[in-house]
Length: 204
Image (cartoon, rainbow, N blue to C red; front, side, top):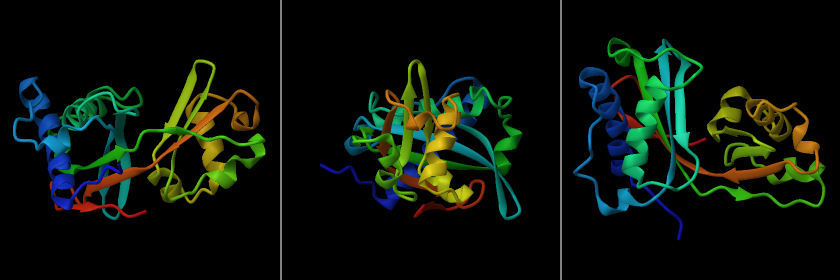
């Protein structure tokens, strides 16, 4: 069964992510969602992305998530939202005042599937930019990039694979080596159009 979200459910999840962050920053406790539908308690992978809005441009301020469906969706959103705000090692923690200039985005993931190819050179043909996200694993290293990332940066499939390798702290051509595992997933994406603004479904 393909997991779907209505526009209302997507808006609920984005608002929940914002509520969780602002509650944590204000009181030291994240919200506990008690009004979610059973559908939103389905176990799903999810990522929460925080973007500082500066005019027409967005600047990443935090992005953390759970790639695999290990928690009910509403709980995964709360955990990922607070982690994106406070635990992304690339950035200092977000302050409450900053939340007025940050747009919140929620990506609900399909379960990742390992891509099987005869030769590693065939991977670019199996990755569709604008549809797929990537997870690349080798040894103890793993990197993940959401489907919206190559679209935002204008990458083709080969560059997407290379960038995901670097996210995993591997050489950019590690996807060409035997023993490197490449997985793809898709995402249902909802985002605030502006900080605390209307929530829209994102079509890549």
